[in-house]
Picture 1 (cartoon, helix red, strand yellow):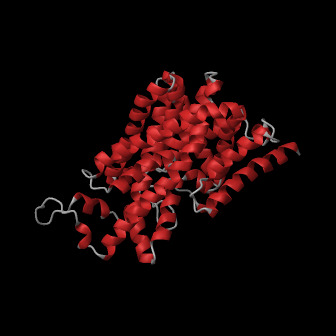
Picture 2: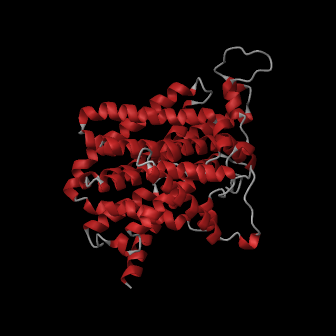
Picture 3: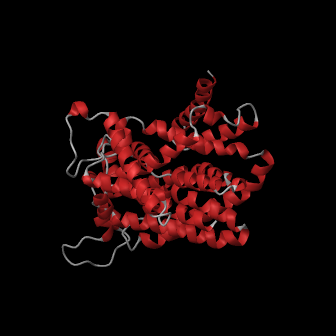
Length: 415
């Protein structure tokens, strides 16, 4: 009975966060609302051990973290990453700009450990926040365990609306080009040889067939797949394959004695198994367990707020807000410098870089929400999606799925 009540409370907090986010059209992020509710609850009537009581225990989380990283590998389309190399480059440049400015200026203002604990969540949202929190607790640096969580909760409050604003501006530019293609050419580029397209034209020419998802969000098949009769292609079979890949990845990581972080190995093996056709696209979603695992991981992350006292919160708000502003400014500077040379508008470049704050599926959701608002006809909506969604998806894959895991593992070693 106690476990069921605990689960109901945890999922109720998640539910309220999602409802408010839906009502506000994602302007108020669900993770921000849920994080605030957990914090208030821990200060008042919610027991501090409610998350493990709800079945999200340490063994569950240890499995979840590994299989989710393998799953992230199945979200990556190497073909799309190569085709959208400009978006990948801009997104990674944004990560570099974040680390450079946040570390460079942050170390002048705050202690080494505070800065190191704060920066990774700015480069990979949920994934990096979890990795840093788990690493800090493993090293018994519990006083800083709340920093990645608070950073994750608070930067979403800035990142989501800011990304939405950038995409709306880009939508206006694209729609102007859609309806008045000649007038939208200004400012005039340098003359090109006959038959040569400009960098912007090349980038904006990407259509839905180069997107990682179709109109229903399903990732398009593109390679030989390990097939079994439909009657045997069950959720249990999919989970069995994910478990095999994860076990093999952890075995290889153990053989390497920590030379390469186990999380990176899990991600790499997920990509390989996916490209070979052993694992399906978005395998855990098809198996029907993705959301359950994500809710468990989110609950675990929010549970670390139980150590935050009111007086402690007052002491960490200033460094957290300062680091967020520095990180986002670094993203803006780096993405802006590459925007024109790579044929992006500043707005699209900045939006691609901002995907580091949340990644998939938030990048997919916010792009669809903006196109549904800005597009007045189905043709306009499709036009906007065709031009913006591929860039947003590959930006999120490059930062959250790859760069953030690498950065978090490095930062854990330099704490």
